[in-house]
Length: 242
Image: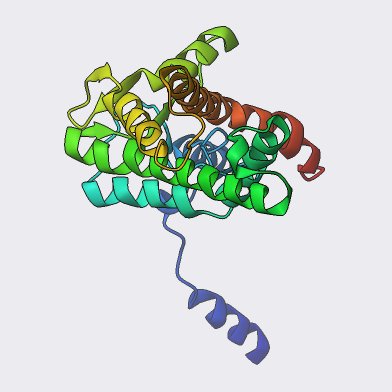
């Protein structure tokens, strides 16, 4: 009798469940689905390195409602693109190509000629980045970021990304000719005449400008399609098995 009374009393002390707070399995599933639907989809969100190496600090997803960035952020982006470690590797690659083609013969060949070409190639990239992504966007109130489209046909996206060297977004959200890109690279080419003694005529300068613009256009194409490449060739192979 004592044991029975003890069990009954213990049970009575437990608070009764509130029917209004009890969720059925169906309601729990609906709540889980709602939480999932509200979670942001980051599958196509740009990361900070293309192929895990190339700097990608100025790419944002174009959602149609992207806030402008302050001047200090523009200069930060320019500095990251100018002094991050991959730029040293890129400069080395360009220097090797220039050495093979014997551009600026007065630099000579061998190690001395290569390192002169390496230094001038590095100067080209740093100066171009700081002008086109930092100083001029601050002065002209242009947005140096690449606004990734991420939708549409591959042909349309490739055309869009490649032509962003001619079109940019202003701090007010409107589109106009990319003065920072065109003027910044033109200034960089003009200054480079000081350390390229063998390539100072108009034809040489136009060739250098075309190389700078072509490199930037190709970079935009990589930024546009990198999330797709990453998802197709990398993420699906490393996805955990159910």
